[in-house]
Amino acid sequence: MEFAELVEIIGDEPLFETGLLLAGGVDAADIRRQLSRWKQTGKIYQLRRGLYCLAPPFQKVNPHPFLVANRMLPASYVSLQSALAYYGMIPEHASVTTSVTTSRPGRWQTPLGVFEFRHIQVGFFDGYRLVDLGQKQGAFIAGPEKALLDLVYLQPGGDSPDYLVELRLGNLNRLDWQVFERLARRIEKPKLIRLVKEMQKLAEEEREFESL
Image (cartoon, rainbow, N blue to C red; front, side, top):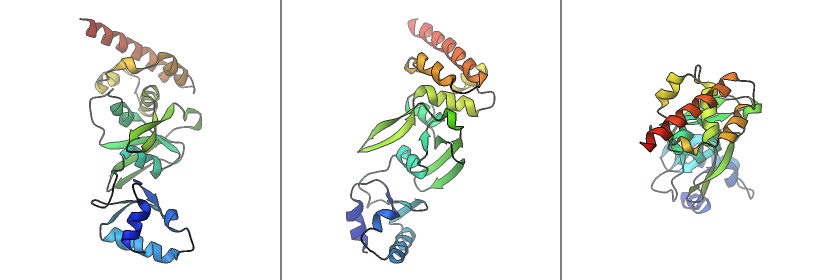
């Protein structure tokens, strides 16, 4: 296969897997040798075993980090600081794309950024949705309520007033309190119930400040 053929096959797909190139009775060993060669010459990026993207200037679409995260580990969704920053609820840009998974935790450094996966129990794998990211890309992202719950669930002392103040949370009007409480009660973690109460206090303070 020539590189021009690969570019034509991939088209405007932001990512591709080896399996896409193995249909039609091609020589699998030859395809893998070509992928290795194109990786070495900087024409493609390898993100994990079997997952690639075209490198600039060949790529037609810049892969969104959230899409990459979903494809790096399919049984996952973007959450924690990454989702909170996406919703404008924390001021800092999240340099690492963080997700949660019921599989093993892991961390990968790739040419497209750093991707971290934190483990949560199966019963708490909820509260996410498919979000349109533009350029025909979409990813599973925690709602703002679940992103905050996941963060506190995984952070020792995460429900403490000091930690919550340190996050510098804003736009608390985005929170749906019924959804927040329902998700908080999914597992037996008293600190998640305490979190809902603390967040209600912070939301009231935010409303009072905005009314001045």
